[in-house]
Image 1 (cartoon, one colour):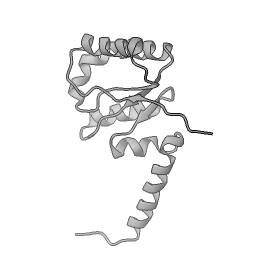
Image 2 (image 1 turned 45 degrees about the vertical axis):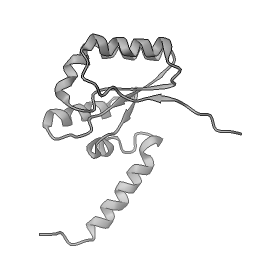
Image 3 (image 1 turned 135 degrees about the vertical axis):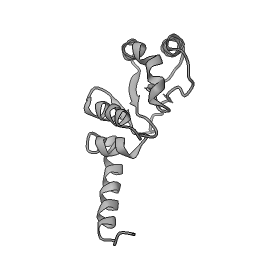
Image 4 (image 1 turned 45 degrees about the horizontal axis):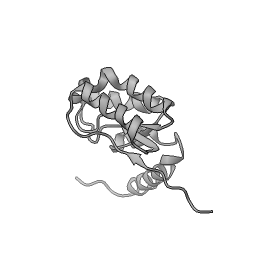
Amino acid sequence: MPASSRLTLGPVYFLWEGAKWRDFYFRIVDEAPVDRVVIGETVCLKRMHFMEPYVADVVDRLTSSGKEVVLSSLASVTLDREAQLVRSLSQQDEYIVEANDLSALHLLAGKGTHDRAASQRLQRRDRTLAGRPRRK
């Protein structure tokens, strides 16, 4: 039996005003033949306030149209408030989370089949590194 293909739309990297961001995804619902849509801020947490008021509406519209929603995490987590966002994403169980930083991967380990292989690789790496002397 041939494998079926699925088309995924990645997150928007542009800094758009919130209404423009929302309208883009509303058009995706109406016009794009994609199966899965990744949404969320991946570049900088400071940009989140532009889209935050519209996220629930976008998610509702995407899911009601039959598209799978994936929540994207930040690509680089360096601040406590960024780590808090990643923790909150990893604690929800309704949507798959795209791990763009190792801190997200660690928090998502074991939550599903999408990250099981990556989690096993990290565990092997940790066991390997544990037996090595540390550099000074």
